Image (cartoon, rainbow, N blue to C red; front, side, top):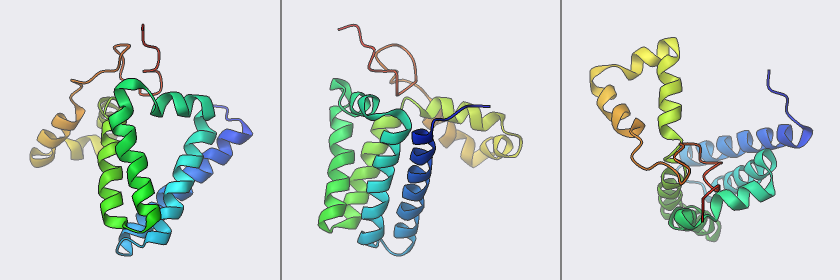
Length: 153
């Protein structure tokens, strides 16, 4: 069992509520208030879970500046009132930021009994294989997006 500190527990709650508000905001035809609340809660929750220093190191690495720009730019665009454009920018930035984590997630999901057999269906397996490819590993040669800051120079 993983032991979490109180601030990490708070962060998990904030992140969960953030994802809920983002999903609910998209379901309700890109409601800008719900999307804005979801964005703020998600980023705050991430900061609580992994800590402020690691959050800044993760987002502001030199090789992730484009992805961070799209993600945080999308958050800003949602906050100023253009939710559809902002969400598109956020999603693109999210995929650029966390693309090193996707092979790990796909490998884990393939070992889950029911989900693994769903991912092996003919139409889905090609798409999952494409997402699960790791041709963009981090600077350390790992696919851990939180430890890519350990660059040699």
